[in-house]
Length: 300
Length: 300
Image 1: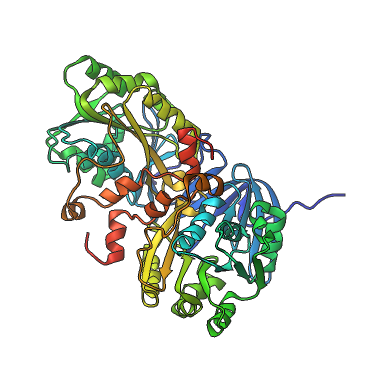
Image 2: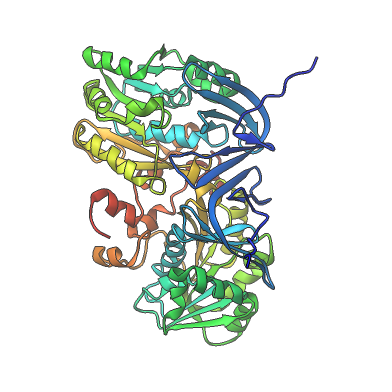
């Protein structure tokens, strides 16, 4: 019996290539050992391959979401920067995050009583359980509840109910597709209403200081129109084009988000996290001089 | 008359690709508008192209050295982290750095009386004057003296003479070629002898936390065997594979290199630098938890 070799438009001569209209003129390449899965889900083009150096890689609509080798940098930062900005997070919600990695990080905080995740595409969860087990382990915790539905609709319902959250993490794909609504004012207003009074939200900001920082400034201005404190920080990892992914963190009450409200002991840090620590939290907010001035609207 | 179209093995279908045995399994792509120069100098393969998004790009032996759009991040960090670690740098030496960008940064420090540069490949200087004028402007300053010769031989002579330096910056290409000797113990011993007692050296460490960090640790251990204080930091920029370039900074006398000895005022920073500032200096030394433990030899 002949097994049909899987193919994908982004893979040629055993190299996966990520190019995007969102960041024209540059691209990222990863060497492919084997294509593990190709499908068109109800919502997006899905690709999973085993790379030679970065373990298994999940790609949605042509853009790398996570690789097994460096995913912890992203998952830890989008989770712990937000969680450590809250004195005692008990109820936490993830919008997106179908690989389970953010859930895995959330339940490392002992104060957490409920970790909810709302993912629109069940196939991402199923594929992660099969091909990204070290991330999907996040689904196994008894504090976790999964909702398979549209995150925007889910947040709208939460905003109307009395069941608020302490921390909401938007771990979506980029805005040039169905995730566009997660980068607009209405969504952040719903998030604001869906939070308790000392609530924190964090969202991947899609771009960074090198790739379309204007978009980051626009997103920050939207957030500033809704939240009392808003700051931009970045996670540094090689499988995102240009090596950085920006994050926007917002607080409902005024606070200095650059300084964590809590911190783990050195021993806890050693056993719990591989990327995050108190120093990284603070350093992740430091911007190159031009970007600092651009964001603040001051001249350089 | 037909003008022969320039070609280079690293450019296909208007995309330049950087892949290297030094960091297997991944690659960087830049869209090419026009190939400006291709040659084999006495020492290396030389390519200059105009990219669609990053201005002109200089490539030596297939590896991106600088692009006009983001070069300031690298030049400012390799220069100012070292220069700000010295109370009053008067005599400064660059080994390599034929594009002139580091010289441009050095003379921003008013204390500087002499900025010497030793570059083995005169063609790099000539090409930079033609295609990278905003970097080559560094050669125009009256404090600058250029030596066209082998940097290792030059340092050997300096070490024997009484004309020491306050700061020495090794702005070489990567170690998998003729620059290999700039990453070995003998070179750092010569640098130590070529410095005044409060002297500082900095060298690009070739790799970073994601690309062969073992090499960084080896280099740091070599430096620790020679210098009193040694620290690793990184410049973040998109045209180096994985988005970071590591730097190793060393001091002849014991000191905390993570805190700059001097700082510019906000006004000076605004007029002098685009990437560097005091906060970036300090943040550039902060490592992800696993890398911190790996470098210190402690368990995670």
